[in-house]
Every structure is written in structure tokens, then in C-alpha cells.
Length: 353
Image 1: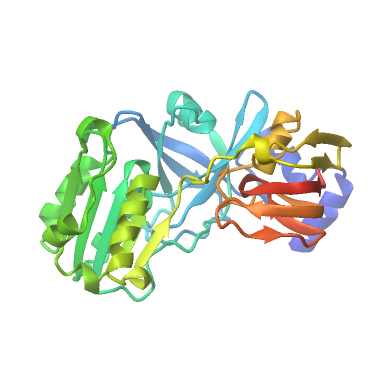
Image 2: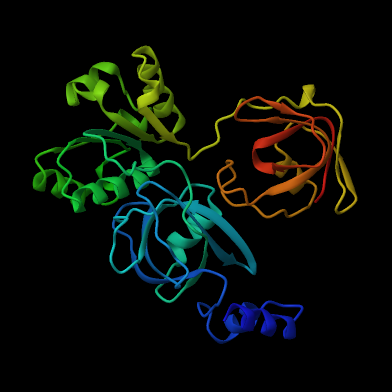
């Protein structure tokens, strides 16, 4: 069968066979994976929940992982990463995504306003190391804030479906109750499973979460013996890490970033030029990420998450030195693939885009 597909694709060059099949039906493909939206719910303020029916290539996800979807907006395909919220053992293999519409989020706002049943999205296999281990710990703490609730919700739903007997604390911070997606279900799970504790806290006036050691000890005095999974805004991430580092529990803390926290760049300290050798453009280095500087130069490199997760924006650095905006590490090796969204030039750099 594979040999026959290869032969047909040779006959349909320069386009792949899927490019012709999608003209007949968008989710009819042989190689590419896609998903059709079957249900749309807008039950929480500022969020939309989509149920997707993936094509046969879908192999499922582990609770906590993310998927990359692609959506065409005004003729241009944009990709983003979202964590499924469904039980990872869902029998019908459908995927449920809850997407928060961020203030300047092109894709999230588009889907929040325009998603309807029948819409077809591109889909990539599940990825990420932030997930429940195959051998479940006997104590689990899930700490989330805002849209960071999504991977933890998949974890909690999966544990509930397995009739997990260990102890679980689900601690979520948000602006107010109406902004919490699946809040009613979370409260129901806590009532149905006496080993689950669900706590939702709402900082005054939408301020930073007031997470502290005392708060955690009050809710789960057994937390030093648990495995903790953390996903949320930078303020919450920092507060939780501070507590775990002070208690020497870093090895028990697992986290997923959904924002790229970096020190602001100072254009006055930026030096050198960036050459985009694929297009012949050269611009002065402003100190921003290579992705931002490419866009400022009028280029349109493909990207997805913009925070170093999906690798969509990877390009080859022909020469020069770059600094990783997350770790601070510098790399001067030539002819190396780098992620444009999390690397900034140090002096003269040549990127093959």
C-alpha cells in the first residue's frame, strides 16, 4: 500500500497526493493528520472547548501532554500548541481542547469567535514530557493557574477513570469562578472521590496568586511525599519553585511553561547585524528574538508556540553566536538548527531563512 501511494505521489508531482484529496474533503488524507471539530462549547468566560475527531493517524496522548493544531486565518496557516483536557483513555479517540482567548492571541481569539462543527484543523502527534508517569505515585499535587489548568484537568480525569486510590490535591488559581473552565465537573469529581481534594482560589482584584508554604501545608500536609505537577503564569511558577527549593523537594516538582519568561532586551546593548541568507536581507540587531527580528524585517517564518515547545520555527544558523533566552547559554557552532523564538543574536549572525 505504501509503495502504491509513493507511486501515485510521483505521478502527481509537484504536489503531494494529500493536496489533491483535501480539495475533495479537507479531512480525507493518507499521510497528513487532521481533526474535524464535532462540538463547540463556550461554558466559561473567555474560553471555548472544542471536541475534535482526528483522522486514523492519531495515536492518542498521555495525560498532561500537548498537541499542535494548525488553522488557516485569512489564507495563512497558523499553528499553536494546546493541552488536551480529556481522559487519555477515551474510547472514541476524540480530543477535547479548552482554549482561553488571550488578549493578543490570534489563533485563540479566532477559534473562540469562529469555531463551528465541521471546521477541519491540522493536527500533529502529542508531545511533551509533562505527563503522569506510567507507574502512578501514591500522592499527587496538581497546582495550576489560569489556562494552565488544561494539562492538570486531563491528569485528574484520567486518574478518576482509573479509580485511582492515592491522595490528590487539585489547587487552581483564577480571577473569579466564572473564568474557571469545567468548574462544575471539578467540584463533582471531588464529591465522587473522597481521596480527591479540589480547591479553587481567587486572588483579590486579579492579582498574583498568594501561594505559600503555609497554604500548601494546610491543604495537603503530605505534600513533601507527593509528586507535584505545576502549570501556570510566571508569578505562580516562581512562588511554587521557591517553596520546593527551600524544602529541597525540587526532584518532586514537575512543571510545564506556557509563557516565555525572559529578561527584557536593551536595544542599546545589541551589536552586529543579522543576515537572513535565504532571502538576502540584512538588518541591524535589536536584541530581540530572531523570530521577532525576522518578522520586523518583513519575513514570515513559520512558527507555533513562540516559547520553545513545538520546534516549528527551527532554522539553520549558518554562522555567528546566539543566546538562548530561557537558559542564557550561548552557542557559536556553525550550521546548527536553532529555534528562532527562544534565541537572540550575539553580534553578527547568519540565519538560513
